[in-house]
Image (cartoon, rainbow, N blue to C red):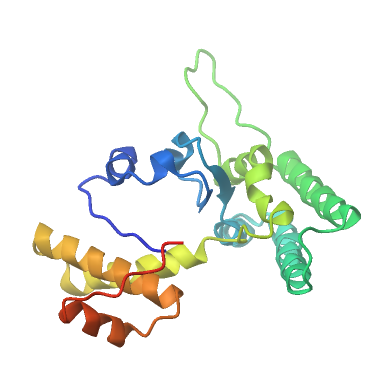
Length: 224
C-alpha cells in the first residue's frame, strides 16, 4: 500500500504527525536518514542502491579502489538471492552466505586501511569531520545487519526503489508547477496519488476505480 501525507516539516515532527512509523512493526527500508532510526518497533534495512551510488562516487571522485571492488559482491548477492527466491528457497546455504559476508568485511577492512580516522587537533571538541569515504565505511561496517538484511530474509528487498518510484510523481508535479498552490489542493493530490498507487500495486484498473469514486461508490483497496 501507498500513503502520502503533507506536512510543513520534513523530519521527525512530520513522521510523528503522520502517525504510521511510530507504531510500525514491519521492515523499514530506507537510506539511513537519521530521523528514521528513532523508530524502534520496526526492523531497519538500508537501501543498497544508495550504497552503490555512493561507492561509484568514491570510485570516480576519490579513486577509491575498494569502493569499485565492493560493488561486485553486493550485486552478486542481489542476483543470488533473486535466483534462490525464484527456486523456492527461503534462505541461502550457510556456506554461500558466509562467503559473501567474508568478502564484504575484507573489502571494508581495505577501505578502513586506506582511510584512517581524521587526526584530532589539540583541544579540539566534538566529533572530528570525516571524509565521505569514512562516513560510508562507518555506515557499512556498523550497520552490517541492516545493509545485509536481504540476505537472511527474502521478503526484504535489496533497495527501496519501489518507494522512490512512488514518490517520483509528487516531485514531478511539484517541479512542473513550481509548488503546490494551496494546502487543500496539496492534500487532495496526496490522497489521490495514495489511492491510485495502492490500487495499481493490487492490479486494479485505475480508470474503472476512478469511475466508482465519481459515482459515489468508491472501490476500496484490499487491506488484508
